[in-house]
Length: 247
Image 1 (spheres, one colour):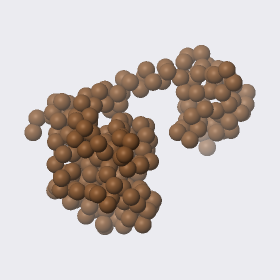
Image 2 (image 1 turned 135 degrees about the vertical axis):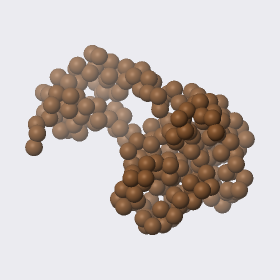
Image 3 (image 1 turned 135 degrees about the horizontal axis):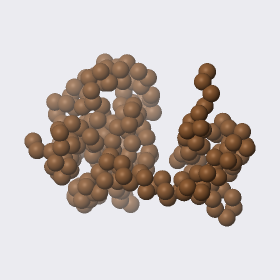
């Protein structure tokens, strides 16, 4: 086995932080990164001096603003969010339900924006959250328009189940994806929680490829897909045009 390089060790320190562990002491960083306390102390010091980490008065470390500055340069992150936000706000004002924008990263969907009202159905989503592609509306929209080889590999891989309604059969997933491509809308019914349904549509970049997806999440009992589908498509089309796509 190849010994970890210096960049590997630096990245392991940053990877020790996640949504469940946003604040860590040095001992926790050492343990979660798989590093000795001495090595962790040296690397954490360097990252803190650069601004990638910040240390509060109690000695606990958090992700630093320097990383946020870099993340803002990602074309699929803050820049896309800023372009899409007016259309997401319009969709929210029309429905007062959860509205989401997401991109694909490997086998996951990553949420980069989320608008929610007080009375909207509860969702297990936050900006930066990840979920498997097959279990969400935005994920199905992105997967349906992914490369054929990737779709094939995904369908044949592990399809994690979250509720009795989660799609876990490869052939069923293939049929659902084909339907998404035909209709232009993806519907995820009670796949993550048993009280919610999401309707999503793909967002295209200037070259016509699908770069993101927008969705609305509503209570399953009140879902009116024939009404929600056109509204989500309008929002997705508006974002696509703003990105330079011309049908």
